[in-house]
Length: 318
Image (tube, rainbow, N blue to C red):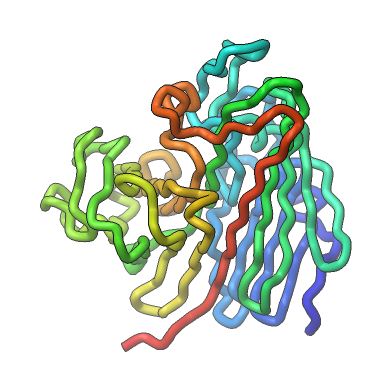
């Protein structure tokens, strides 16, 4: 079949479906342009977490992310953790919601020339955010992002990908080859916030290496960042028993930071999850990232751009 984009529905919502011989991707514009499905067709592997028993529905602007459907792939901008806008100027102190604004706002969507484009305007800050998805080949897509500053003064912001990938006890996390340590920013039940852990073996606090995922019964979670800027823009998950994989690749100059969030039934009760989070701010709260000098500064009436490549596949298992 040819690659294409068509109108569809997903759980009662208008959706747009992108499909090739090897992969399928579904977007629901009304739900923050959430990517609700990312499927590798030869094996039927669905890589994005379904909402399960949580009702998939529009939410009120400013809602807490943890009280929503906890599924799919959302975009976090201009912060992850709720805070006041920190930079001096007209917008100082403006309240920025949990996980940013974008996931709780309906987006406009259009398809043209093999490209699915979604866009939305900010509410707390004056910007236009655009995401365009197109096929690179039958098992990979390019996702292009832009944030246009619509104001007459600079904006300090950051973006973070938030794909909730389905994980199992067979999943192994792939990080850039140069990574030797991860900074723990949320230790859950077993790890210590603020401590560095050796990659991939850890220190024995977990009953496995920190590159692996525990069972749903663990009822635990944790979050790390690569310690410092990444030299190689690449991460992914591979299933050790089937060889199925998802990889993300990007320009590390555009996106110098990488977070990893793992949930083993603590927040998402029906499925273990690994979120791989390339980002251009460090880390999580915009006000703290601004204090560290690790945000993106978009000059007045200028636009910042970046991109990701997402690839699905399966390799032989030894």
